[in-house]
Length: 411
Image 1 (cartoon, rainbow, N blue to C red):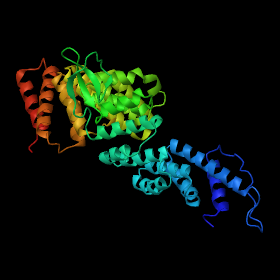
Image 2: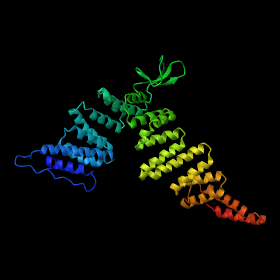
Image 3: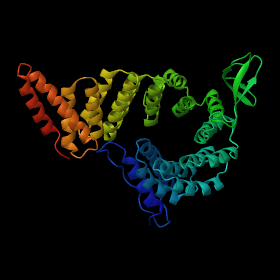
């Protein structure tokens, strides 16, 4: 019953209609088989139901609901295992659900039946990428024999594998290429950039992430992920400004509907290139797109900004971003200690004492307790000196002794 045409067709129809707006009427179901076994038109209805289910599952995967797609497609593929489109989509759903092993088990027999189907080959390569099996990825690409029109998609995946192997430029070398220019392909090399000397260039071979990604992009492969990878290669080569310029040159497209990795790339390259305002803008965007991780993203952004301003010697901004971090996580002992120390070093001892007291109220046995108590005592003495500026010296000395005794109890 489970794998019958009627059961699966009905299930596919119901599942496909589940993506419609609430209240959408469901049409009549096909009549049960007659004495001859099937009613006229039942095969056509079943095919239509499967097509609707497959399209619905595409939407589920795009919407971040791969498990729902898996539940529907499992029945569709069980009914018709030779149906390549549903098999491919189920494999994609497994990959989106972080189940590459199940995707591989599904794709291997499918490739036996359809050894030249490019989409199945690409999914098979993506399984190896998901498992971080970089050499396996390259081996599968080399054996794919893809048509010329489909080659850029494989080159992009090869670039990802070489990136994973840290073969950014491969066995690069400086060569003399008469009349050459940076970005040009001169077999078997890519002229990455000019080098001191006449017609001298840093050249990357085919076995490198840079060569493969440039081949894919120059052939018209315009997937946003490819531009992000290109930028990240330059970042890892120590040239974040180049990577950031690549992203910004395509910002209108990349940021139209950005995913997590795209925004993270903009953030990473902006901070590495010293563009703190840009970094903070992208991090706020990331936080807005991920409500469940909003505080964690914003907290990390505040701490990164504080660290960068500290490195620049901009004391006021360093303190400001520490304060913002403390607002997000008010009970974090490390943040409170850094903020209190920064206020103290800036000469704002009263404010530092307030934060030190808050810290000790939350972490009474803090490892820095003795140092904190000594500073609190010093701040109290300063306050008493200001408050008793007209008092006789012996009163000030007595007050100072009391403050030291109160603030520095015996351990």
